[in-house]
Image (cartoon, rainbow, N blue to C red; front, side, top):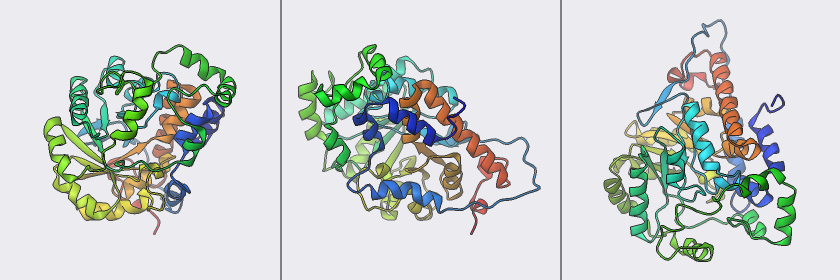
Length: 378
């Protein structure tokens, strides 16, 4: 534990412990991965303003996201196949997030189901929705999220068509993995992962199998998912989703000022400035570079969050300084999960919390709610 000091340290441990196809799934971007790299690199270009001889006592990172109290402005982002990074991964990550006082967002394409996560948590979590052609299935998903007492619905708007990630194609990604000679050899090098996966029955998309029409096994699941992402999804669909849900709604995948203004008109509670972690439109601008423009465009009419490229507490502080009320981490918690299970997710959050707290103090601020553009070097 003493040598695991950064998110990068957790990443390297996860690389050794998680089978290649699943590590690469978490760590890949679309096409050339240019936008994936830009998400991180553009954070590095933002410089902080050092302040001295100011009172640094009684610091607080507490704030709110969509009206919910959080211990710091960080949420666990929705990530697909989380339960393939570590057995029962979504359940373990949700428990770690709850203990840390930050939101956990469960993906539609999770390995553990909505009900699985609800069974091991005591506080409401958030649920991320992909809109499928089968609207009855979508309504059922929303109803299940309501029954599980989820406190927010996160509508992902940027996955109507799936961007190609070359690593996934080359690795023959599937859940569970196909038992080819290459995959068996790769898994044999990860005995911890194999032992944990043998101890669980959760190895496929449990939000879908047994719930979608005609999907009762893995063979039918594959063809169903290939056909179901709806390319016709439009702003008109947001209204019926909001009405059927009836609770707090967050729209994820906003990377353009005009789209941000349109999202604000829907009555949603927040938007997430996001390019899907560089996994969709390669060549798009980084999330952090678009954040100030989108904050200006919505002019306070809707809460603005951001994800993509956050690898440290310094990155969180920079995002807050540029106008984000909340941030999301996907890969950082997945690295922790793959490295050490629930303990690794906890460590990832502790690393970010400590970095955020100390950096905020060295920039002359005691409360995260007081952080603004004045902490940035111009």
